[in-house]
Image (tube, rainbow, N blue to C red):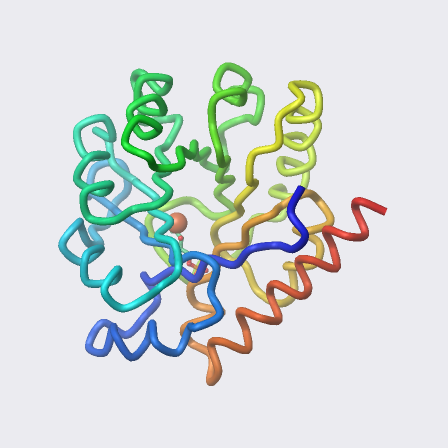
Length: 226
Ligand SMILES: O=C(CO)[C@@H](O)[C@H](O)COP(=O)(O)O
Ligand SMILES: [Fe+2]
C-alpha cells in the first residue's frame, strides 16, 4: 500500500531547447514520463532511446516509458538499454503481452499495460495478475495538451474492483489532461500515479505543481481508503 500518490511529469511538454534545465527544475518528481510515438499506432512522432539517454543524464527520477508503437516486442529492449525503469505497452498493440511482460521482468524493469479510452477495463482480466502498473489513457493518445475525458473516473473505479477481486495491487496511472482540478478526484477514484505534461511544464513553478498534484491526489487517496 502506498502512502502517497506519485507524480510523473510528461517530458513531451518540455522545452527541448533546454531539456537539462527543464528537468533540473523538477527535483521533486517521482518519475519522468517519456512518450514514444511511432507515427503508426498514433498520428504523431516524438522521440526515441537516444533522447531517453539524455533524459537519464539529467534526472535522478525513475524513467516511466509509455510506448505508443505498433511493434512493442521489437523495441522494449532498446528502452531498457537506454535506462527505462518502467515500460508500459498498449494492450491494443501487443500480440503477446505475457511474453513482453516476462521479457521486461527478466531485464529488471517494471512492466505496464496501457488501455486507450475506448478499450474496456474488462480486457485487462487476462494480464492483471502479471503487471506492475496499469495505465489508463484519459485522452486519445498522440498529443499533449488535450482535455481530460470524464469517463476515466469510472474506468479507474472499475479497475480497482478488478484488482480487489484478483487480490493484486498494481500501480494505477492516469495519463492525459491531468491538472490540479482533477487530481483529488483521480486519487479518490483509485489512481496512484498521475501523469501531467502541460500542467507541469507550462507552469511558472513546475516543482510546485508537482507537489500540489501529489498533495491533492494523496488527499483523494486517503478519502477513498477512509
Ligand atoms: O501519452 C500522452 C499523450 O499521448 C501523454 O503522456 C501526454 O503527453 C500528457 O500530456 P498532458 O495531457 O498532460 O498535456
Ligand atoms: Fe503518456
